[in-house]
Amino acid sequence: MKTRSVAIILSLLIIIIILFSFFILQHSTLSPSSKENSSTVTSSINNIPSSLSNKPGFISSNASEILLYNSGGTFTILGHHQSDSAYSMSEAYTPDASLLVSPFIWNMKFAKGYVNMTYDGPILNVDINMTDFHKISPNIGVNGYPGVMYGEECWFPFAGHSIESPLLELPAPVENLPQIQSCLYYSLWLDKGSIDDFSYDIWMSQNPTTTYLKFPDVEIMIWLYHQEEITSSYFKYEGSFVVPSIVNGSHENLNFSVYILPHTGSGDGWIGVYYVSQQQLEGKVTVPLTTMVQENFSFMGKVFRNLNESEYYLDAVQVGMEFNNDSTGTSIMGVLFI
Image (tube, rainbow, N blue to C red):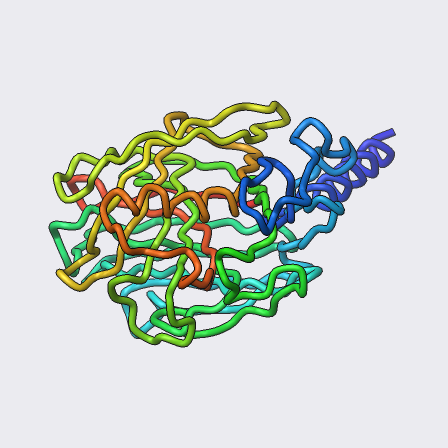
């Protein structure tokens, strides 16, 4: 009887691992676009086949998917103060493409401990355990952004190109992007410090071969979960944006506050666009990625009148967690990508 129970438990675990994917990019009709190049997309969120909408992924009007989770094996990346491991990198091969992985502790001058990123089959576990953290820029309340990247970034730290699906080859002209919805399945935990945000970090440039980001390049952050609030006067609130989404199996209209940072870091720094969720989202979350990328031009246009969508390329999509330490310099927290 005991042997039979153990066998049943093992079987259930195997089924769970097979069914749950980590990060799947989908071509989608989640939110029909008003763009002329998307005029053939007519189905709505309610018309997505249930067999597909119940799975994490990118779904298109023809139900095509790009599966982006590690296809097998186990490996670990450690980021810590010694050597250059804060920017160490690996590549996770997925059923349809690949992801570049890095702890990216970009604001660390000194610290004890580590960021441990371990892939075990399709599951990525990010474990942050750091003490006595000293920042390179103490006035910035972010220690790093451990996460993954799909696409091409010719600049630091990735300076590389993931393997891509023919369904979404990046860089790609923003105005010609297929309608994509992106599904993430994740769980956050926190002991000490703070989770500034769990987010998408999306990059657009006018020159996709650039090795140095500057104005008018664009960084779009979509904060799905956040403990940080935007209060700095450098950020300009430009309104709210409501998008139809799927949260843990339920169709919802998610409301995002939108902020523009005209220049990041310096007077010639790139433009920052921040979609800040008014809910703290966790679990399985699907958002219309193309809609949010393309519609950011209406918000940037309130600050910069001469930016044209036709001049931009979508270079890369990152997903990760910005984290910070507490008053003692301690950060103990993590995220599980399923």
